[in-house]
Image 1 (tube, helix red, strand yellow):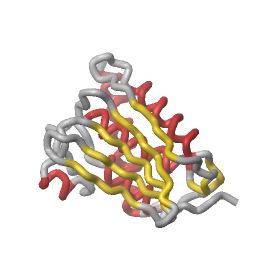
Image 2 (tube, helix red, strand yellow; image 1 turned 90 degrees about the vertical axis):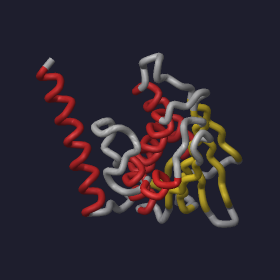
Image 3 (tube, helix red, strand yellow; image 1 turned 120 degrees about the vertical axis):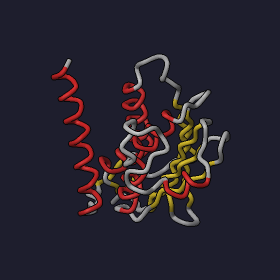
Image 4 (cartoon, helix red, strand yellow; image 1 turned 180 degrees about the vertical axis):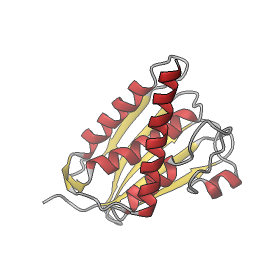
Length: 184
């Protein structure tokens, strides 16, 4: 049991160091043509497998509006950013699950991936500090508080952003915005 605890904590430390490096040396996107709906479905499947405990398992529904072209993105970075948003949504204690909606905004040349939960939502203080590294509204020791800051850094590598809309008792919508650069 002690060895398992040591291994688990060393993985957490490794994740923390990787997250800190992300801020010290922001990554450049290694873009390649990617089928975004397929990538999103794969991330959803991976995140759902992480929550095998029936007490935590919640459905994640995917809706793709329109027929997006293959995009030139860094699939690893976008996958990590989306996984961070999904983990946050699932840990907010949603009652009915999480909804992921992907839409194309041709006017602003953006791809928007919305992750919406019906969990506890965020108060003004939490919303104001949500992107601060190490900030977490959860009890100490529960989470590193690096998911949203990491997602924001990875979106920035794609000339994008992460936006939040939330209210206490009304859930949260985190929107990952990516520039609509068509793949060659």
